[in-house]
Amino acid sequence: MESSALVESASDRYPQIASPIHMILVLAAMCAWAVCHKFFVDQLGATANPSRVRFYIATIFYEWLLFVLVVAGVRRSGASALIVLGDHWHSVRQVLRDIGIAAGFWMVAWMLLWILGWLLRTAALGRNVSMLPHRGFELTLWIVLSVTAGTCEETIFRGYLQRQFIALTKSAPAGILLSAAAFGAAHAYQGLRMVVLIGLYGAMFGVLAYWRGSVRPGMIAHA
Image (cartoon, rainbow, N blue to C red):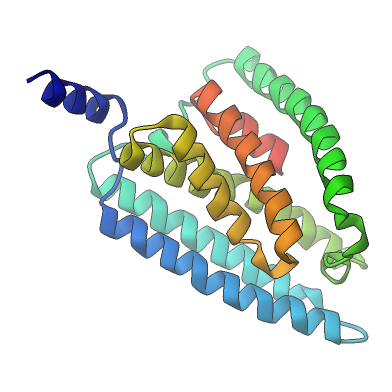
């Protein structure tokens, strides 16, 4: 009786926000995009004067498509989309508070990532150079891509997958780590050491989202 009550209590505390089949579909879509992303990045690196515009537009489109898939699955299960986004801001003070938290988090995360990157010797990899914008229109699209990544990836990885993993494992630390691992794996095109570094970055975002009960500060810092 006591064991059954504990299981029910854990289920109430960490409810699933979508069906397991939906989560598998989301993970499969992410795997497919990781493979395509690898192809795009290799193509950019192999070209003397690469056109990044197509890559940026394809990434923006895909991330919003995955965002819609996640939100649709959550709503189909009967839950509000706000469960993966966090509650609305109700005052300017709340907005400024989240901006302040995001700024503080960004500075601490930057220092930790610099140290971890030095230990992993990721600076020598130089895998992201071909992705960076060089011209006016590319810069504009890069800004749009940055905002898209902040909004969509925090919703997908921290708002959705982290909650799902926590519900399945009945453990917040396990859910955070599994979501961080998925976040790192989604960036596999950057190489193993960068996957480790990005996974650790994802874990930091996971802790922030769990502590705040919202992905909004993470969205701001991520973007």
